[in-house]
Image 1 (tube, rainbow, N blue to C red):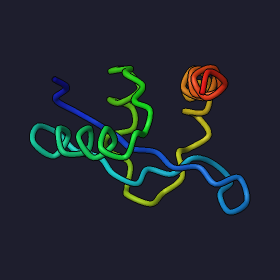
Image 2: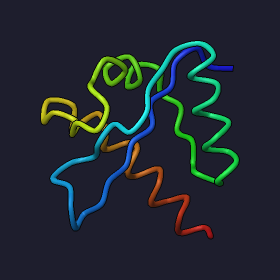
Image 3: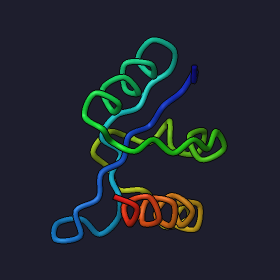
Length: 84
């Protein structure tokens, strides 16, 4: 069970970068994870990345200095989506 969670959304037609759509610690983190599981949203676990994103404002784009950290997420997501 994770003590922190951050949910990201990226719409290449509307967004310049992924946006934080939910974040929280403790019980809120668990609810974010449960909601993702309920809707079959892939869950990527990287505590260092979560620590970098947890304090960003909701609905704000991830700043450019964190783009490199997101590369692993997108590579993992593309690999998993290709298995479907």
